[in-house]
Image 1 (cartoon, rainbow, N blue to C red):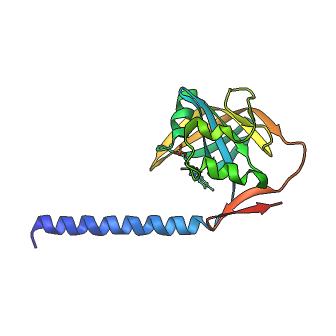
Image 2: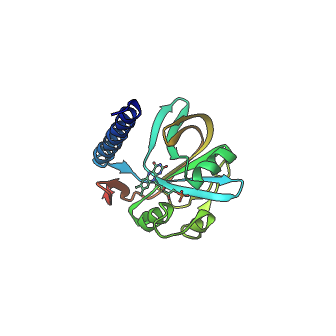
Image 3: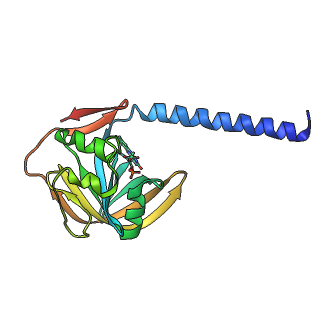
Length: 179
Ligand SMILES: Cc1cc2nc3c(=O)[nH]c(=O)nc-3n(C[C@H](O)[C@H](O)[C@H](O)COP(=O)(O)O)c2cc1C
C-alpha cells in the first residue's frame, strides 16, 4: 500500500471512530432527563425560537444561566443579533408548542409564534405568557464549541407562573410529565 493509501485508511478509521463516539454520546445523553424549554429571541429578522433542554443555572449571585444553541438554527442568529434571549420553561400542556419549536410541524421562523400567547419583559425577547417560569437574559459571554455556541446570560427579569402545573421533560427520545 502507498503512503497515501495508509493516510486514507487512517483517516477513514478516525472518521468511523469519531462517528461511533458521537453515537455513543447521543445514546448516553438520551438517559439524561431534561426540562423542556423554548428559547426565544427578537432577532433582526423578527422573533425566532427553538425547543431546548441544554439550559443550566450558573449562579444566583448574580443571577446567571447558560444555554447551548446549535449554530445551524435560526434562533442562534437571532440571539447573536439581539444580544439577548428568553428561556421559557414549559408545562405538559405546551407539548405541541415544543414540537413546533423543534421544527417538527414544518413551521419556520416567526410562524412558530402563531401558536401560544407571547409578551415581553425587559429585553424584548418573546416571553411565553403561561410558561412555568421565564428568564429574560442579556448575553454577557459566548463560547463556540463543536456545532454549538454556549451563551452565558445575565438574567434581567424573571417571571414565575402563579399556578403549579406538571413540567414537560424529555428523556429517551420522548416527552414526559414531571411533578
Ligand atoms: C426535546 C428537545 C430538546 C432540544 N434541545 C436543543 C438544545 O438544547 N439546543 C439546540 O440547539 N437544539 C435543541 N433541540 C433541537 C431544536 O429544537 C431544533 O433543531 C429546532 O428546529 C431549531 O430551530 P430551527 O428550525 O430554526 O433551526 C432540541 C429538540 C428537542 C425536541
